Length: 71
Image 1 (tube, rainbow, N blue to C red):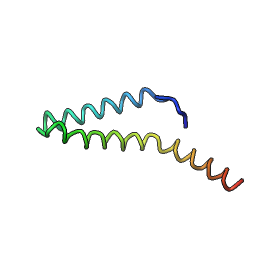
Image 2: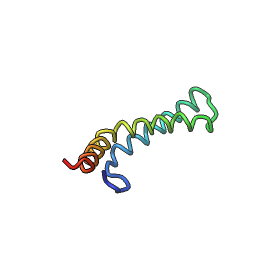
Image 3: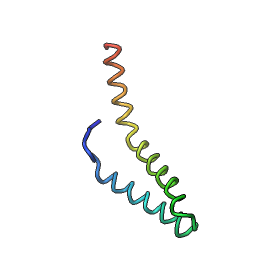
């Protein structure tokens, strides 16, 4: 895993669009309070971000585990 700010800017931009559309849908169409709509929109983006980063995280954990075991 890299420590850069954004090593996949297109994926991060797409997540920003998804989060914005989710927030807009909750506020404008579902007539939810804007402060209450922040939670579901943020949760959606966080879940998608974890799903996108899961393969890299698993490979990183696999390499660390192999270093600990010593194989």
